[in-house]
Image 1 (cartoon, rainbow, N blue to C red):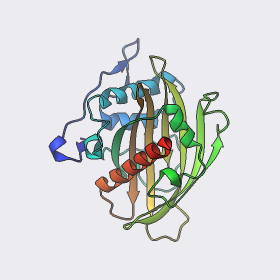
Image 2 (cartoon, rainbow, N blue to C red):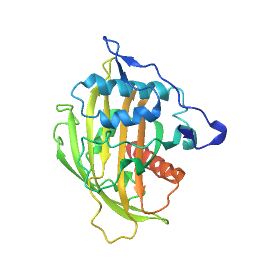
Image 3 (cartoon, helix red, strand yellow):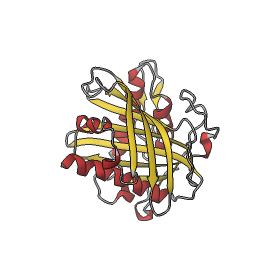
Length: 261
């Protein structure tokens, strides 16, 4: 069960309405634990309505939470259920770690900026301007960089060389991050992304990230975009879920500030 980090605001995850096909089959789960895994596993499903169903369930769940509140504890979750080997079976992993060992956290945010404006951030080679925990974050777009922002192609892929550093941790890793345009049932165009760490970092740093995954969405709203992310990680260091959530929220805030400028 997912728990709010603020005990006074603790709620059980809300069940959204299931999205059901004409033949009666449920397309997407309605609880956040299963839904986050679904979004990772189904990211490249050839049927775009499958991923759209997941996005619409995330949006329905978000309606029950204060996604605009400044206190991120009221729109975040600890203890997200770990992914399974089946969930990650379509991505290349060489680190040798079981995804069941990677703990997860999740976070909502109602952004003041449109999906298109956020897509522009995806293309930045230097991500340090919007990643406060990273003194070094270099992105190389490997596919779709010339057509994704205009939606002339459906997907974009990148390789990312990332350093994470603060008073507790000094580590680095390399990730693959991909994005996909998804048309919702009402015609709005959303984006679904996922990230994974294929290998152990070739690094002399003592702190290690053994494995890392995330799913992230950007859903158009009248006043900007609904953002949601779940990130799972297993590390050599102890790092409380609340600190990871705070770091993710700092990145959300940095995007807002950068776009405002």
